[in-house]
Image 1 (tube, rainbow, N blue to C red):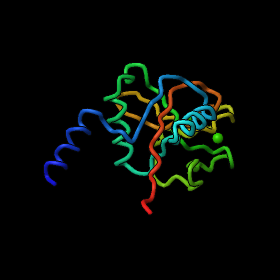
Image 2: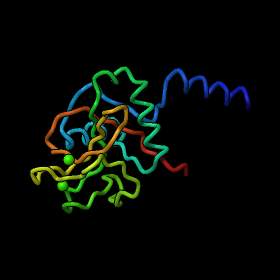
Image 3: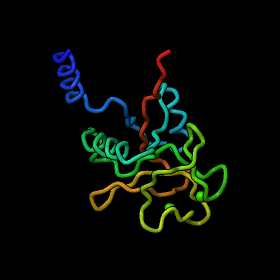
Length: 145
Ligand SMILES: [Ca+2]
Ligand SMILES: [Ca+2]
């Protein structure tokens, strides 16, 4: 059993965090949602600090980090202005990591949430959904029946 755990740990180290995936293409938020779905995944949600840290680490270790400074995640206020919810369960965001003065609904056009990297950290920003950028998909947890 210990050997197995150790082996899994080593595999995890080699492969990085397999929960997440950043496709090598840019897309608007809607296309990003669709693309993750076609991979049998979903646009990532970030419900807590641990997940936020895991995603930050995944991006840092990915081969795309040099190119990626903005990433769509699966939240928006498309249903009701100013009320941000997670796409997959329509729940209000409880944990948030908004940048200073965000979300600002700039030009009254910003309804989709992106991760943005600057000054060495990731923050959230509301952004125009039509903007083409990278995005992060995550595995969908499945209940064992
Ligand atoms: Ca908005
Ligand atoms: Ca904004």
